[in-house]
Figure 1 (cartoon, rainbow, N blue to C red):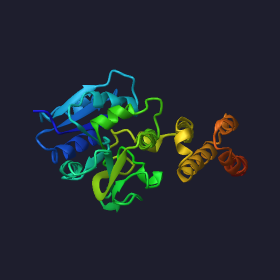
Figure 2: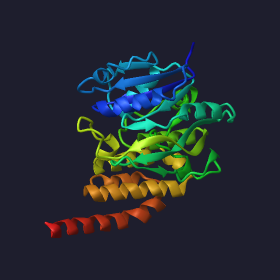
Figure 3: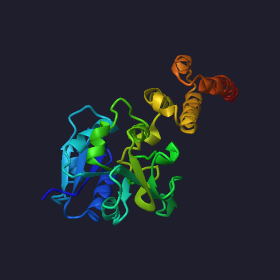
Figure 4: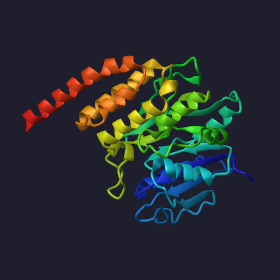
Length: 304
């Protein structure tokens, strides 16, 4: 019997988190579901953390490389057998019943509504939880909806049909931070609609991580330089598509400036601006960002 849904969980150096993540999926996964765990060069191996979890729905694969979030997830997807893909980070947990909720919903969605995401619970160190709702409205979101409302992180209860994932070309392995932002832009550019569920589907855990044996989140530990390079990559790759979405484009440009200032790094910034279109954006951001960087450097010197 072929599975109806495949979960992909990539992991690196988070044994405690991985066990909790897999257990949370198994408690809600239908019998015709599968969990693909991808060990992306963990030390100790992820197999050690899952040694006593003998559920046949769990399959562990070691990623031979290339490594990194996008490459590991793409490798995991290649091991799946179901027409529906769902993703979970190895430091998060699934809300009970979420997979069945998604399966019930997609049967009534239009064919071009091929991916979706949900609200989440944020769990603090003391065990308390608060609901975090996306800014997106509930329901089917298409071209009539501003692009910022159709951008979803893979940790936001993200699901997608295997056909749409393959058609979009999978995750871009040339970007390690903000890869889900890039993927959302690519899906929107392909004309796919999405569904926003305002009922939480995942439980996100906040740093510090739940165990000293677990490595911190790649996104949370990413350097300011890695962040601005990621956003610049998105602006460059999707320049033609983003011309139609000025508010979203300028939002991403603002983040470029923000993280360049944090990094104190203006290397190749003028070259990036010269290549960027429309020119009006360059005029809006170039002078203020240069002044902002100069002020930030001055303040750093004063503190020293």
